Length: 346
Image (cartoon, rainbow, N blue to C red; front, side, top):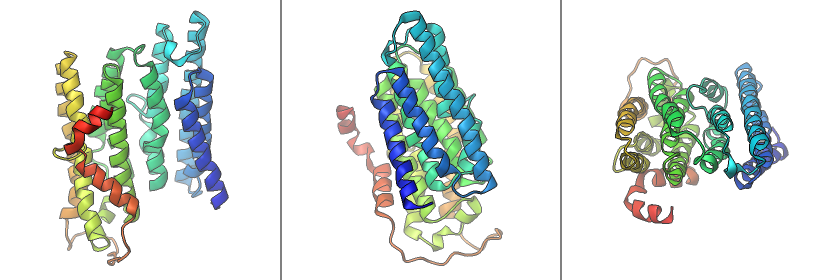
């Protein structure tokens, strides 16, 4: 793909995201979502591999259906209330349809089936965009409409997402699929809290984006697509491999790393809202995610040759680590001590 085309698609992604997150009118928000979908499709299918074409087709069909539901929800609300303002969503049927539409956009259970398949058919950089930037507009719409949405529906989806995200990631051998199920699990944490504390859900999303970007870029720099490849990457970048272990543990939410901060605050807020049972369930379900992060960390750092994988040994590469990876991994590990400042800003 030539640089001019990449620049056009990058600008379109920026335009679509900005349009959705800054609009008050449903039609403008819907237009931004459509621009985003159309801009990412060529990036998914650029390798011309059958798997990539399949991923692009699945992504297009799911996103088109979700966008149709967003438009239908807003039109139903406008029909009954005369309001096109995003924050004025008050009709119960519209609220339910919008919840379903945004769950499809994000990949929340039970509308999650497309996400691992699409991520598996994409490159790691496009997978990073799908897991972070493409989730930002739907999360923003959830944030704006959160007072109108039913907490019970969101809580059910959230607990199911955390459970299935952890459960289905257990036996995966492809790093992109593992990160897809990790994303589904993290979305569960955002969905459970958004009705009670929308700002906390956004903070969770920002920290999740930070940690996921660090993991994706680390895996991209060592070209690890499978667990068997990950077992021999210590010869290419030993220091990056050691940091990857800590970043994965941060993504799992272990203290004293950055990933512990959103989980701690969400459990605290749920307890204050007297839904301690849901907080207990989601905390226990996060242990499933911890298992496959530990599995990834074990393959990356603790496994040493000789081993039985039929993979060509990678030679040590003296190339310096990307500055972006260094900054993101540092932030993924060390933001917990300044959590009071972060909370004051939020």
